Image (cartoon, one colour):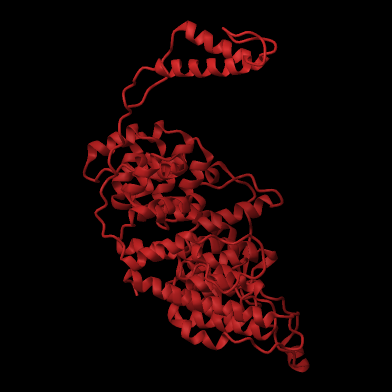
Length: 561
């Protein structure tokens, strides 16, 4: 039974304070009660303090015991197989080495394999051993990117633990209602109660979950309280409509175009422009069409009679190829602003080009075939653009292709992976190329990146590899390994390829491990090679092979091989 420090009688409290004062001043200046000055005074003070301590403790009155915590909830999922449980313990026990460059050694980086292991375990529906929950929560506490997978795998018992340890409170913030289950889609009363009374995080989670199951019900729930929501909350709620976005959302989004918040208006306009059949997309198409046209101007021919031409044998000058002419808008009118065009250009950007880019990226891509003579996207992208507007126009088309998920336009803008510019006429950055690739199918995406690597090596391939499905397809994996082998033969250090090598460890198909055995030997270093580079490459390939075999073992232990 616990005891609380209930108040004691005033004389007792005063006696204790007197002893404390005596100890602070010293027994030479003040003697304790019942003792005289001299060498025995300190002993008397300690005896009095001991007696007073015992009296104070004896004076504490019993208090009611604190309520015991509820038992941890049951987890109905099957437990991990023993081999997979042992593997999990090894992954969680691994700690990354000191930061900085240099050699990593030949041992696999186990913490970098943990996300892949968690994804496989979650796909199989396994539950963790209870004793592993603290280590799982500690791992998620240190790495925010692990939290969704860790909390899904750890299940309800992790939330039970998080309520008992302040270090794991992030788990409660990450789960709606601190782990409370979301109401069923048919439980309208609970849905309404949580929407009306829940915390902001709970409401966002409810809206997102409902949107993924019943898009119309989620939209109606949001519309019912839209006028009373705060601007920053409206923005977050509106963003949840990206999932399952469709024509039925148009009336609500059109209403949001008149919102008081500029950010809400801009988000609503972006969502509407992703619906090529929306009224906003049609309005933007009209505005963009005014700015872009085909210029059929021919090169003027010299004035001459047929006889003169015949005598001089000068052929008539051929007309120039069709050219795209651009006339950017001269103002940003209120209608454009209502439809999401931001009037104020960023620093260092011209206003007219800023407005023009926004119009083109919001216009349906089908506009341009009709506007530019029935040409295909590839033919349109190949046309020259007058007056240095090409980069602005093509960049806007890139953003439109990503927003509208248009694979045909993405192919045209990417171009051939072996092209000299290695990204097509419209991809002005690696980040844009990666986004364009994201609109293509898995196999086509991998094929394009494999061609890019074969033609241009790995120096610019890191971002492109990041959008490819895992494990990499056979052609893509072989292209990466071949490029790494070429870099090794050139005698350069592997550190400049550490990002790609790390991706290969996580993304290369484990079945490729046997094909890499030939790369484990230390190669002969060319005359101009960096000293010791061959040994470093052999070590890096050894780590790659070891990691691939470890991933194969992990999959087998989880039953996913």
